Length: 313
Image 1 (cartoon, one colour):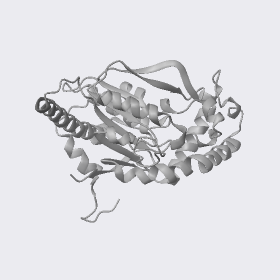
Image 2 (cartoon, one colour):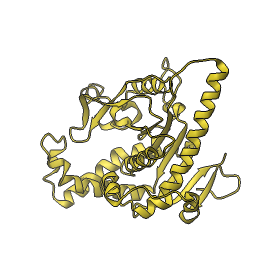
Image 3 (cartoon, one colour):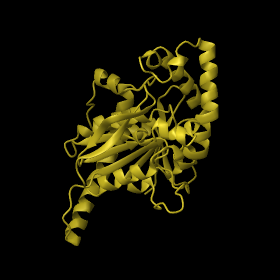
Image 4 (cartoon, one colour):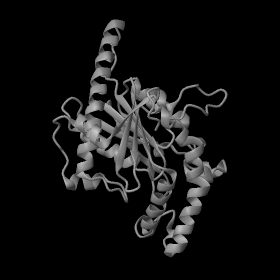
């Protein structure tokens, strides 16, 4: 990230960022953290202390300020409306660790007395189902903007911001590689909703006749999880190798045909998938949205966060 005074971000080393934790106690145990880690992730309790606790404190300040403003505006307008959730968006590449960041923040924020109701939704649930992707001949574009039910996601977020209750978000299975029929994440006016996904910060792509509204328009705060492309490529391949012995071997696994690959074949296959699909999506659609985020967490090659970039107010 640029370090000149005119840059839109203020950059922090981890030691500098850690001082913003103040005296917030560490609420997680090692057992709890282990349950939140994604495959091949190496988040430690020290990293929670140094990175995630200061971040949860910052987010809590934003939540309190926004909620107070919303109450004031409703009183000013004389409008009766249900609670309006604070929405946090988390973007980044495949295999960069978005889901782990989202789960840790959800756990930390839910333990604060000011906002104990924190829901988490992945935009994977708004992917078009496999039958529809095949009908449109875009199975090889899965994860690209055109592979999502954009209108469905926008309607869901609009309903959340309208204070509606008993909302449902579809669920995606990485085992079947498809939307799970009749399974939903229930969202009922939480204090905070975390939305994580590949393209959630994208600000282009609406077709003629579609509403000129974007997913990020509904966010009150946004994060981008960043790492060098070569590093993410290695993480993707490592994850693919690990999945051969786990998910790919389970009954009903969509990618069961990869389970029998030897290590060299698996590496070659993963590299080909990365270079033809995920790397293209990263450079064309995901990385260009990085500087739209309010905060960027940069990860080093060993998965740890080594720098924080906060957009100047």
